[in-house]
Image (cartoon, rainbow, N blue to C red):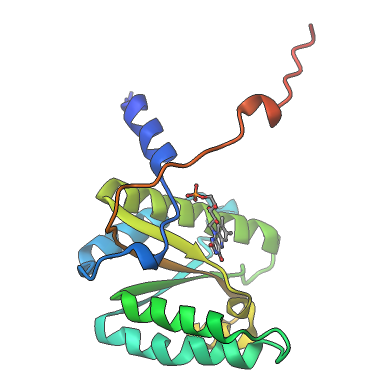
Length: 196
Ligand SMILES: Cc1cc2nc3c(=O)[nH]c(=O)nc-3n(C[C@H](O)[C@H](O)[C@H](O)COP(=O)(O)O)c2cc1C
């Protein structure tokens, strides 16, 4: 039987934090780390083992493509009255600050047996594996989901045929102390029915 250090894995789970790219240093994240992060992502569960996750990694010079494309998509996919120049500038600054960005998408099951919702759930599990792996490496990670990522134009950019982008996954070395999180105590969220 396999055994794991429960105390360590509990710390890992509870220390996973969403750390935005504003907190990253300029130190480059290497391809090998990204590969392990994504491979661990693929070990998430999926109904029917459809493995619906798709990743497009923009790295080093490849970042230029998203530095051009994503702010432009934000502009073109946002109704004029909702467009905010500050958001556009923040997105551009984030994309300039990192050497790698992973666009994470769902590709729905071709034979339509699995509900789309379950395919999305599976990709969310993959995202969790990815952020836990980053945490183990001491890398910050951040799931960003601005509205324009759900557009057909974004899916086309990623080469997704029947599905959509679900997140921009940032990762990088963190320039400050690891932040603390907080959660509601379980008793607010869980009811036990013991039959007593
Ligand atoms: C589906 C999903 C989408 C998210 N999108 C954003 C986002 O667009 N912007 C953001 O600041 N955080 C986003 N987050 C991160 C949450 O804000 C974060 O998980 C939450 O505040 C709890 O913090 P923690 O992850 O450090 O525990 C997203 C998280 C999930 C699960």
